[in-house]
Image 1 (cartoon, helix red, strand yellow):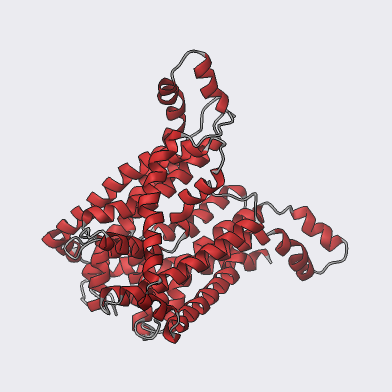
Image 2 (cartoon, rainbow over the protein chains, first blue to last red):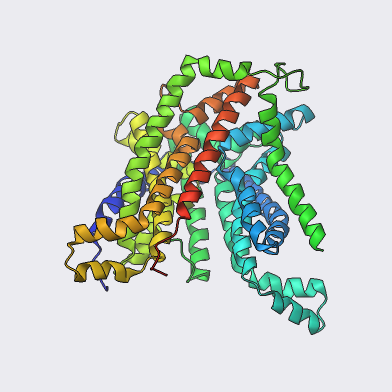
Length: 249
Length: 258
């Protein structure tokens, strides 16, 4: 079954992706490299907002990791018949409409006067993307043989040494995958910071929306989109390079 | 240690679900204000159902969801079938097919908006349908690929040996084996499209709003139990669709293939 040529059956899907993904991305890049676009690419405001988004994405990723690792560990050590059920419970809210979930958070945060703050924005992002962290963590924790942890402790490691020197290195692929899966969408988040963070928490996504919808400066918007795209591609490439055997398709 | 982990997990689950449950509870509240529960009513649901604007918006949402579901299922299944083969550039192609899952929604939404504007195509339901097909295709391809990996390639070769044409081998052997994944992928595509906000927001016209877009504009102005009722209804539909999709994906591959 060795076929050297590209199978004909790939032509329609690949053609579609060329027309509605590759070319549009090319058009955005071209727009970002016009003189107005370059002005935006070199402006302080652009990099301040991108930097802010990177910081928010990093904080959210760390919070998801800290909250999610114990959850994933707990699920992986549950009795087999409970495992899938609890995992399903963790993942289920992710499938609920993003706007509906954000609205639910608004109704909770508003009475406490927490709406339109950075706290609300980060909490909302954490809430939305936690399942993305737990799933890959669970997959890699489940593969860690309990015996190895026991062996480490038999050889005199304290529980915390066994965790940091055995469990963490063994689950590193899951940690990397979870961090990437949270970081990338948070970086480009738009609806959540817009609705929960209000005027206080403006991220790159909100600014792109502003450029296109009200400020009428599409070149600047295209420039910021290009920056987000480049960060995504660099992260994905680094991830795939480090994990040659892992693949999505 | 173990009980501490379980308490933490229960706490996180509470944080995940409490807002949704509170929102659903207040959709049955008589009072307009979400500060205290004054009495049970279905009035807010009645208002949602009686809202003729919402009916039109629901129609838009379903049109995009069904249209992109059909297109994405066909294209995504083709992609998965093609990527099974080994050929030069396979890694590049599989990366391309998976890309829409990776890039932030706003990047895909803005790229298509700029593209349609450059071609002077007015944004409408049709452009949103194209956008949804692009990201849905990737999800269908991933679901179907996972299924194809569990399938014994010898079954298809046996069909050829027994004289089947490629067309017959596909419809009589391969397709029945991957059908659960194809349907599961289709349901997933429908749900993702039904729920999408960011990409729709940038690729549809002002007159062609969808339900998530309507909620976005409603909640910016006010909070009302009517939005709670509408949101709760959407929540129930999405959860039902996802449960159905997962159930379908888990149907056995075939009796003899493992």
